[in-house]
Picture (cartoon, helix red, strand yellow):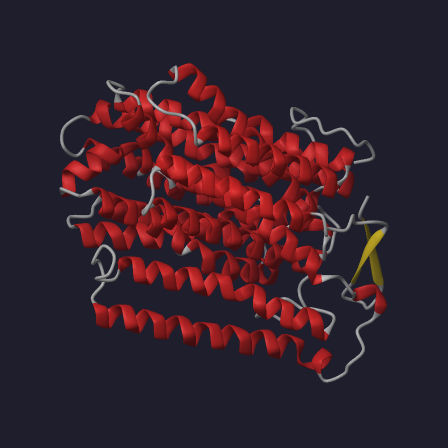
Length: 491
């Protein structure tokens, strides 16, 4: 690992083999998670859905991932990535089979909601890859993991309409989606047998307490509490959207029950955060080497809100956008063109991580957010009068900056506090889903042009937030099991 270069073809190296093993696990979670999007017309016809019900399904698909990424972040820091990723793949595959077997819209909605849990797989690999690569390579390595894995949504869009047609009949879409679930279940066994949490001889640092992030000042404690509130607020918005005031999937009494559950969960989470940080709040001195600034986490959260949040939202609606904007386009073609957005993940996210490694964390992130702002404002102007090829170019331009921005965010996540990388990644990832639910909720009320304009406006605000990010320097310090201090390079 002495070189700053990363040879992805050198599979004689353990860390390279581990990277390939891990990005493919993430790839399969995204195939499963977005298997429904390119099959929209077939699923809508099978269940005689109206467009509001379909849009509700899109929101449900990303809703559970918000708390799931927090929970999985805690689990991966405590139990390690190997076992957690294996269980997630297996359970996600089972839920995918349940979705493919649904007989009513209510069953379809419930299983799609539960499938949101598989979107938490991303968090697991962030911690795992961070364990196997040094700071000078971690941006590119995390970018390869995230970018090549994220391509799963594009692979689903490219292939599943064709697979459904190959099976044929009214149930072709069910078989296509079911196949993805079986693949995830089979790979869960492969991953469990081949993955390791750390390189041989390395320590897997665990949090001192589980249940919430450890913060190192009273100001950061209250800041942390405040940063959790948007997650509950957007879930309350989702409950309202599913109530009789929205699509009517929930009764009014069930909606009130959901509000109560969210209040109880919020109170419970706050009590756990207090428990983890009780000693510090009561005046216990935090060692200087253990301190970090929570604002770094908060800035990464908001940056991921507009990057990954917008990607999730756009990937969900883009095949349908092409189908409805350009008259006479086939389902397979719309799926393929919609996949152009996610296609850029293959190079953009690793590229964003690499540029972040070389050019600085804050500068690279700022440039990417400016680029995606321009990209979304451009997409807001696309209509039936545009040549299809030009519309695809606009999509790919925008997606490059979106995914490079995601790479820049997670190039920095492992450099904040190693023993809590899973939880930090989980919170940032959850904010990505907060962004997705926010943007998809807005999309349910407005046309596509306004939807793209709103995302561009949010990006401008978050550009200002990113200017407060501090460059990581020197080393971070963690404590070994024997009490000695281990220093981990940040540059």
